[in-house]
Length: 125
Image (cartoon, rainbow, N blue to C red):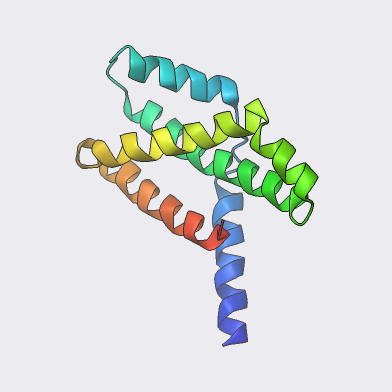
């Protein structure tokens, strides 16, 4: 059982590494939000970027949360940090938007979204 968990963890790491680590970019997220708010048609590349940014933002949020865990003063400060709350907002908005448009995504992006959601489950926020 332990070996299976290690193998699955190694596979997850390999999968993330193979794609190259996507860094959380508030600028990229804001560009996507602007397109959504202006009701512009998003391309498959836009959807792919949205999926990548959603995962990167969750990793950023998890990292920030883990760094403050157990320190009430730091946790409270983090809750009021504009960059942190903005990242949480992007995750929520992108997740809802992607779900709403899931059936119109290409097969590749639909598969990527499913894989990303599995990775998010693994992060155990």
